Length: 263
Ligand code: CAA
Image (tube, rainbow, N blue to C red; front, side, top):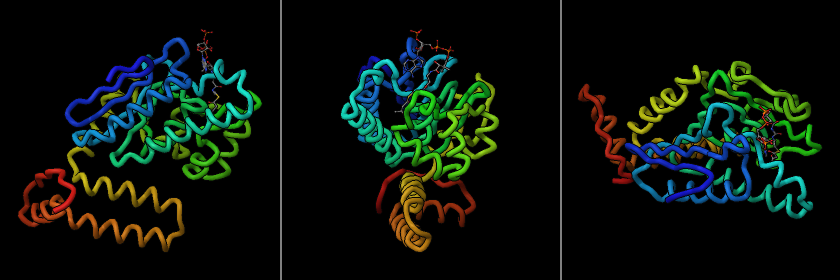
């Protein structure tokens, strides 16, 4: 499928979505949100795709936020619809059964930071900069930042970022747990791809169950989370890959996973 504000490629089971609006540092306008929604649907329905990498085009920006020129004249109702649309797309991305890596190559501000937060983990270029600067526009984050950032880095660190609008460099983002690994700019995509290949080689049912258990468990208390984990563990046992993985270990060989979801 062809898009005008992003590229979506699929190679060897690894999909890459590259947000591409160079004239606006890849800012998210309504069209980009719509196309991102379509691309996520395209990936969700393709059983061959095992991992998704999300990045931005060019060297300067991952995504510099929601499109301020589109937002500037919004009425409150239009703002609500726009935030709802952005939240829905980003939640859909977070809900994908496959692992999603954000490869943050530059500015990840406002809606761009919020997009990265919904991925399973974030790899960043040394040139990446993170921030929720909406407060400096007289606004607050609207694509999930007030909810996902505190859950990831804790309420105090998140409120310091949200209430000041300060920018955080890649190394600091790594220190506070926002970013998992920092790469030289030219090594970022290679690093993301290497990790994507490792995950793509794992059992599909186990990947799906692990991601669901973590995500669902984060929204509940420990006791309920442990029940979720127990059920997901049991469900995994029904997959041919679980039989193969344990058998291969006992036979001292590498497993050959088929990715079939049940036996
Ligand atoms: N929306 C629309 N256009 C944007 C944009 C955005 N979020 N960010 C950058 N651009 C545009 C600029 O207007 C500029 O366009 P022109 O060349 O036509 O003037 C072009 O991209 C290049 O940007 P700059 O000239 O500003 O580049 P710079 O290197 O001087 O600065 C920057 C880079 C620090 C990222 C700066 O562009 C900036 O501060 N951008 C806005 C960041 C921001 O506030 N993001 C939050 C948006 S609100 C939001 O996201 C709400 C929400 O949660 C839903």
